[in-house]
Image (cartoon, rainbow, N blue to C red):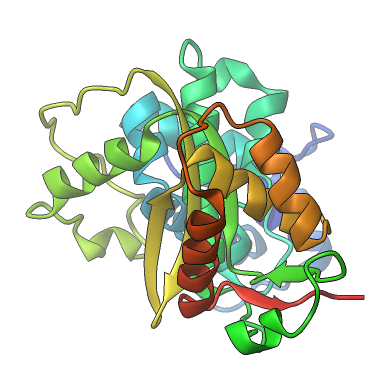
Length: 288
């Protein structure tokens, strides 16, 4: 049943007439689906096949507007179909549909050529927003709890919904420009019906693609709202060190050892960063 449902549709959005071994799909359907007084076994199975693909493609379409803008509307639907054919849904929630998209794009870069790196950056960024939106939140650590442990022994966890991204392009600003452009032209929710695929929007003025630029981002949520924030190299390195299990002392020392800025009062700066990060709720107890 799963094999039948997960098989991609034909160009006319119907169930494939041939099974993977060349047999008639109608013959195969008769082996495990009963007909009724209105529909044959094949027709009953086709309903599930079509609904599955309309739904999952629609969800990916909504979750990846940035990647759509990079590869184009038509190519994105072909890419999404190839991805879901290789890595079909294995979760009860549609939220997890894109969890292996980055892996797929690395395995099959032809889908995003000649913008492979930009597309990977965007896929990682958009998946981080999914994580930020509904991953779990652990009990927060306060600054008082942090200050009561010597820095050499203090190890701090970061919230499960928080992602640290090192990117090659300014995809944050690019996606913001895309969403601003589309603010007044939201896609018709009718594309969710059983009888239509995610429709292709009318051609719009393209957003200029970003130039290469090293960007360090944290993607997180606060008060149930999604945020992303650029970080200075040293701040990013400290958070990355904490995420890797380093003590506060070692994370800060490693970050400053690679810093080229010598005119900064690092004690005051780090205190300010930790105060801000604690206020945002980024810190939690590290899992043992």
